[in-house]
Image (cartoon, rainbow, N blue to C red):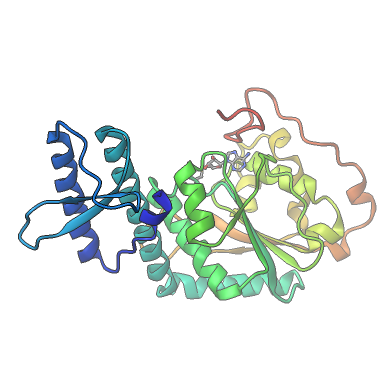
Length: 309
Ligand SMILES: C[S@@+](CC[C@H](N)C(=O)[O-])C[C@H]1O[C@@H](n2cnc3c(N)ncnc32)[C@H](O)[C@@H]1O
């Protein structure tokens, strides 16, 4: 039933606003009703009408009581609003100078990693894009990159994604979600270059990813767009035990900064493409690689497997 409603599409901001007005009117109306509204048909929907200037009508799914109905309508409005906002952000980014520069930096990163093109796309720690503008613009950027690069797969994981966000990522934006919390410990795809996007993620998460790919062939196929390794390495407050693999690979890393020319400063600040010059590294370098263990009180903001509710 909800599926039927979710197929409603809003074509413009104007239409969305008028739809929201109608929904608000309907919610008020529902609040005033003593008895549940009559079903007007057998299609699982109740037609709620109210005389407005334009005689607009909104079809609501049947629910057992008016508070369920309100929740359904609110969920639908939130869903449509979130879709609209992400699409708007994607369009803005695609048309921006920032995106042009980002594509140049990406190309530079690919060339230095000796990878021809991006075949897979992996994203960690995007955040709650239906409520947080930073995460929303980062998703807009991811979708713009997906459109440009046409990778074979796009996988995402953030333990904080809400059920609404998970459903939008899959059904609306055609992306795939990783089913379990791997804490970033995912080896890149077996063939082709994987672009890993981990915007403003804890350095422990990046460290875990490096550990899981601690092999010349794996890291050689990885292009990592994450917080600048140079910033971490040059920060005197950085604790070596929380970024062991990041600090070990740092001297063999080619870093191409993402020019932060987007109109909002804190969406893409301190991010850089990192590629790894693995061909010149001796075999001994890779041998010793125990799984990282972090002090209990210093896991950064990495949410551990089993930790989230
Ligand atoms: C500092 S926030 C960054 C959010 C957003 N990308 C931004 O730039 O504001 C770190 C993000 O890492 C996510 N995170 C924490 N543990 C994670 C894990 N085990 N796997 C993937 N993401 C994780 C958090 O949920 C959070 O969204």
